[in-house]
Length: 233
Image (cartoon, rainbow, N blue to C red):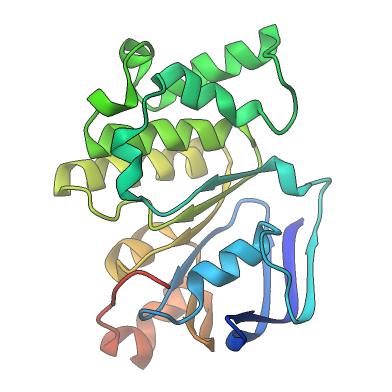
């Protein structure tokens, strides 16, 4: 069943069209990886999926009872993350803020479960400032999980992480997809990881250059020539 459908969608950034002619359907159980060069519109498209930007053309629709505040979002890492004074528990439990001001018993249980999934239970009272980059990303992923059991949108979740933390993050996301049945949309410049974990690939350069299964992408000339790039504007 389709959780999210984009039909002939276009977005503008600072008055310039940065992504257009987007047709895609994300079904329950999919793992869609969006790849492309710097400034190709990847992050803009994800912000549109979240309802943070309105398309200048086309429609984005949610299905299977999904609403905007039920999408878990992990944004791009930023330098302020390390200096955030809140505790791990405060950050994770804030994922419920869109639904209620105070946590009920079930929400507390889910927050504890998400901490355990991210291997962070023993750090719940620690400040975010005390954590490594990889631990901070896992805290924010736990927070995103508090907002959803259906769809995660991840914008470069391993950017700036060392190889060990990168591998751990990919394994956790894969576990959420395979064993927790969470649908995933992830922006990445890591084509090898995209092809290894994703079910579908969207290669974007302002317009889709490829949209289909990861298996077909691996066979394409585009995949063979693509070398990656920097973060989106």
